[in-house]
Image (cartoon, rainbow, N blue to C red; front, top):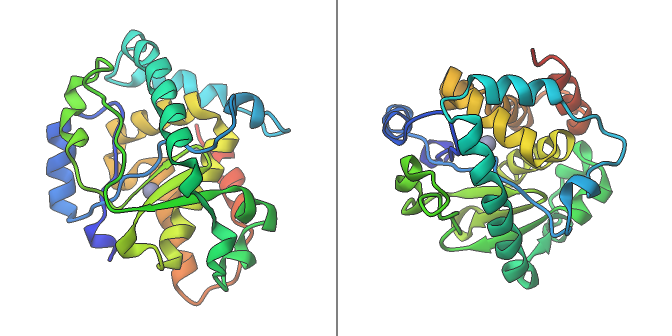
Length: 234
Ligand SMILES: [Zn+2]
């Protein structure tokens, strides 16, 4: 089922190269982007987790997306996300409401209560062209399986009962919280640009964790896993 998933890109790669790589891998998932209904996620996430400014500087410095482009688009994207999450908030359900059996073994109960998903037929995509990121125009018309914005994720109705998909998106929720939105976006874009999407560090982290979740392997603390992995970032 992961073969039908696709990963969204907000920077770095050209739309064409992303499409080609997506086709080559036969995957269809978008995630990574943000979550939370908090008015200021950066403040909300400033709860003792360190922000990796090193990652951010490196990402912005090496990304094909210039720092000027990124900083111009970023506030617009944040505003769009905020507006979108507010619009859909009444449809958001706590992950805990799904009563998945295994997720509580990997995630804190508080996360499963505060992280919410919106089951939907068509995912809301940011108008990247209007934000000056016309190279990503193809994604605005895309049909994807899931996308995470801060601590909210949209998931296609067709996969809403798939526990491993929720697991994967929750890894991104943690990434967003630990890095902060701006650093996450910059690191995600840079990783895609440098390694291709399936090997971009933030995505690889999520897929590695998901793979461990799917197979009979020891239970682990997902948040500690993400924190340790982020600590190894160059
Ligand atoms: Zn992902």
